[in-house]
Amino acid sequence: MGRPQGYRLFARGGPVLTLFEQAKEFADDLTLLIQNSLVNAPTAVAEVREDRVSIHPEIPVPLFVDGDVRLAQLDIRFHCCLDSQNTWLAIETSSFGLTALADRTPILRFEYQRDAQNTPAAHLHFHAHRGALTYLLSRTRHEKPHDISTLHLPTGGSRFRPCPESPSKSLFGW
Picture (cartoon, rainbow, N blue to C red):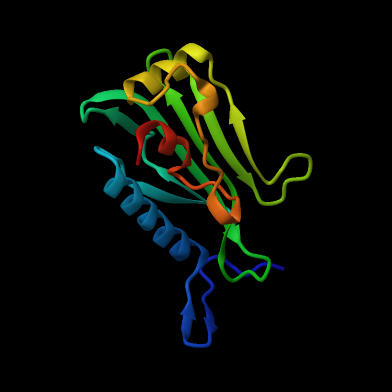
């Protein structure tokens, strides 16, 4: 049986934050990450839905080249819950997608599903048509924009879990 919303736990060293408080801190950290990395980045918000919290920027994150040409957008979304001990914030699902604005073409999407059954927990969806992807690569001055095989897509480092900057790291160099 779960704890009522707002229930505060106490652990060694002081109080443990509620699900919403932990999610709000996570949203604040996400805001700092995207606003310190990108121009005109929006604020991230935490929205409560029953015993889950959705964390995402208020609008898709605009991605620019040369500081003023908007080429793409980054869609970031986390769905969080409490861990199996009903104590700490846990990522239930996450999705980070890159969409080209020239033709609204999805390029790629990194996803994580905590309780995945029929797919890998962390995985990549590659949607790109060659034209949309090579256009983005050439505009961001990729060394070989027409040779897609030279594109290295990060998969989340040593934990093999994608992070918000994964979709744009290879294309926009941050």
